[in-house]
Amino acid sequence: MPTDEILAVEGLNVAYGESKVLFDVSIHINANEIVSCVGRNGAGKSTLLRTISGFVKPTSGTVMFADTSLVGIKCYDIARMGLKYIPQDKKVFSDLTVRENLELGSYATQDYNWDKVTEYFPKLTLLMERKAGYLSGGERQMLMIGRALLGDPKVLLVDEPTEGLAPSIVAQLQNVFLELSKKAALVIVEQNLSLVSAISQRVYAVKEGRVVHEISDEGEIKNNVCEKYL
View 1 (spheres, helix red, strand yellow):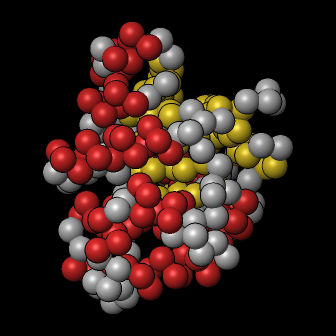
View 2 (cartoon, rainbow, N blue to C red):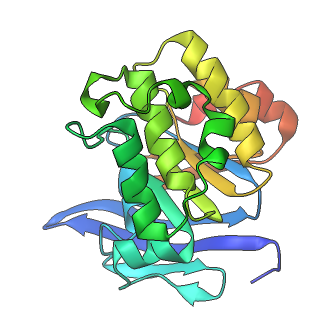
């Protein structure tokens, strides 16, 4: 594996029972790179992230994080290794406050430095005593990303982060992702192609469980060339 490559997926096949979802998927991620996976609903993008992060077991193929194979490792152990998955459902512990949600993240990682969270999301400072169930969708997304930052992960897998969010929150997340890439690689599943074109260094187009194209040319990414492959 090249020294700048931090995550490599090769020949990944995934099925739910008799229903095959991913077909020989191969992608690679370099350190401090933002890579987007785009495709229509049901293309298999979320399954790809869930498989990499250990929530789904592949039928075949390899997932290498640095020099370690992740296949067969429990999802919580993968998170401790520095690869964090942020699901699209925006689920938080609704009956707990923002502070208590962060305390749980700190307990799991033994990282109690919340400055790295509020640096990116200063609004959370004002919401510490609010129950997470009363947060807006954008605030819940901030909390989920902030919680994932504890432990200083090397790779963040972010699933549909802007779904249902106001344009102002999307713009804020765009800036946050660019800043986060200075410390970690990001793999983002996203249908907002304007965001994809603004932040991505490479784009994988996924269709019917297969990677149908990889785009690395900056001009093509800016011009949303990936759209024609969806």
